[in-house]
Amino acid sequence: MILFFHGLNSSKNTNKYTTIRREKHCETVDYLKTGYDAISKRYDELINEIKPDVLVGHSLGGYWALKKSAERNIPCVLLNPSLFPMFEGYTDITVDELVRAPNIHAYIELGDEVINGYVMAKFLRPQAALRLDQAGHHRIKRLYMVNEIIDQHFAYEYIH
Image (cartoon, rainbow, N blue to C red; front, side, top):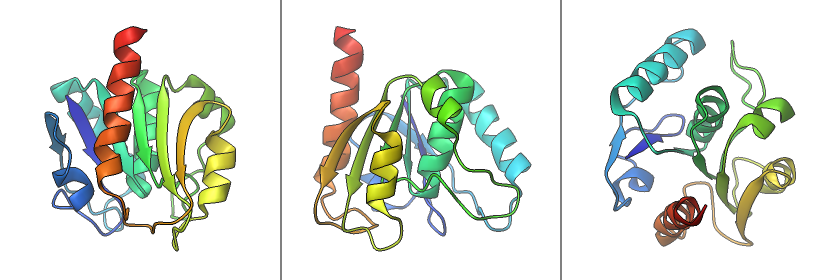
C-alpha cells in the first residue's frame, strides 16, 4: 500500500497520484491553511490507519514523505521534492533525518522551474537511489517515471 503526499496547492486529484498503478491512498491537505503540527498529526493518523509499505511524495509532499519516513522507519519515494520549505513552522530536512530514512528512491527532473533539482540531488545523493532527468518541469513531464521509480523501490525491497 502506498500513502501519497501531494504538493502545495494540489490535491488527491493530481496526475502524479492518479497515474500510480498500485494500491494507494491520498488525502487532500491545504498546507497553507493547516498548521504544521496539525498536518503532522493527521499524517501520523493516516500512517497508523493505512500501514503503508512506502510513502510517496511530490514537491512539498516529498518533504512530508521524507520527514515521516525518518520518524516512522517507512521507505519513501520522492518526486521533485521540496525539502527546504519556507513556511511558518517548517524546518529544513536535516542530514540526520536523511540518514534515518530507510530506502529512499528519488526522481528529479532538473528542468524544474520551482525547485532547484541540482540542490535536491546533491543533498539526497549520499543516501538515496537517484534517477535524474536533464529536462522536465516541476509537475513531472515524464509521468511514466512515477511508476518506474515506485516499481524500482518494490523490486529493491523484494531482493533485500
